Amino acid sequence: MFSYEFMRNAFAAGTIIAIICGIMGVFVIARNMSFLTHTLSEIGFSGAAFGVFAGWAPLNGMLLFTVISSVIVGQLSARSERREAATSAISALFIGLGILFLSLANKNASYATSILFGSVIGISASDVRQMLWLSILVLLVVFVIYRFLKFDSFDHTGARVKGLWTNTLSITFLVLVALSVSVAAQIVGSLLIFILLTLPAATAKYFAHTVGGMMTLAVGLALVGVWAGLTLSYVTNYPVSFFIAAIEAVFYFLALGWQKLQTAE
Image (cartoon, rainbow, N blue to C red; front, side, top):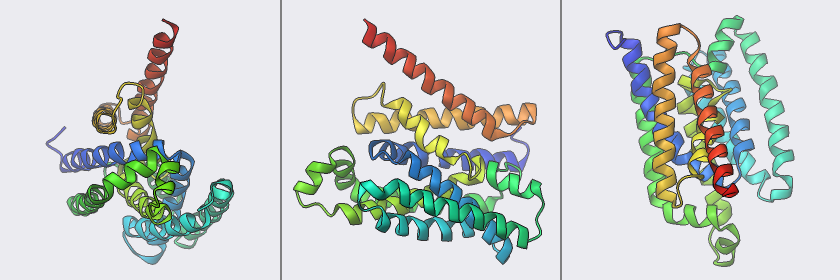
């Protein structure tokens, strides 16, 4: 399996993705932004389609669209009562734009499928390097704002009372999520990226009781899902996104069952 360059690239990219998604996912869950993550994944599809239309690499188009839209969403959804309406409106717009750009670029359905569900074969060494640099940038920013981000994510009311710059912090976090979505979509696809950004962290919260513990466990679960998914995809020739989604869903349902047993005792 590792004799093929595309599989080596896929495993390198998958490892980077699992680490980023595991760390960012803890804050996504804490801030109740699973729906917004799904929206950004749809916007990523539109960005990738625009990149194809403009003659760019799909990742560059994803970065442009997700970063800009995350700032717009952050401004529109500063008040929680209008967050879902704002994100739904933006999601609908960008899905339509994605379909339009693919149509204008004269790309067939198989190309759209690779954007939506990922493509292991299409990952090159230059893609891995770009993903690595973007991931390092995300991790550095998270490291710098970690204390404030943790406070705002797990005690938003307390952060506002203390006068923390919550709105700026929220927009910064959304930009980081946008970068994470663009990075991870190379393997899982833009449609299913929210799986890695939500399920490992959602599973980890049932077993870990500290933020660091949740991050460590979420990264581990994401790594298992991605590595096993890539291996099973190579062996069976079925889509890697299916296996990753199934594995992470099994972990989550097992965690729910464990929680039920604990509360029943």
